[in-house]
Amino acid sequence: MLAVGKKHESWVDEGISRYEKRLKKPFNLTWQLLNHSSRENDAARTEESARILAKIDDRDFVVLLDERGKNIDSPALANKLRSPIDSSRNVVIIIGGAYGVDPTVHARADFTWSLSKLVFPHQLVRLILTEQLYRAQDILGGGKYHHV
Image (cartoon, rainbow, N blue to C red):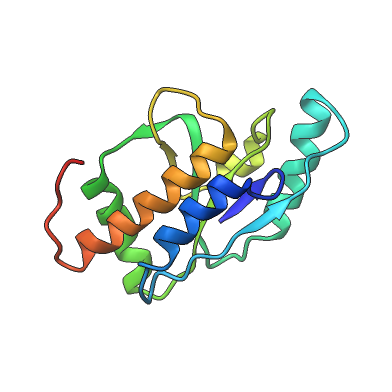
């Protein structure tokens, strides 16, 4: 996970830890938090986007979280992750900063995903994302998908 933002708040950290403990190989969740830019608007977006791209390898499968992305359910997410995982590619999921990301990050993304058409605070997105990765792992492992 590559996210622009501050350290996880304690309640988020507790929830993330709960799901991280359930993850098994090849799901190895790590967080890399990048500081917010001290700039604003386009200048912040450009600076943060450059720092994001500097952390991505050419071989990585990149998923960009964006409210304008494709809204898919948990089984579809699991299927989207199946090919890169089966081919031993790292999956990098990006959560941009308050101003979003610029077109260079959109162009690099292999998939642009929306958790929903709602906008959530970044801390909550991190927790929801961790749970969805746990659910994708369970689905790919043959577990029964169910609505919670």
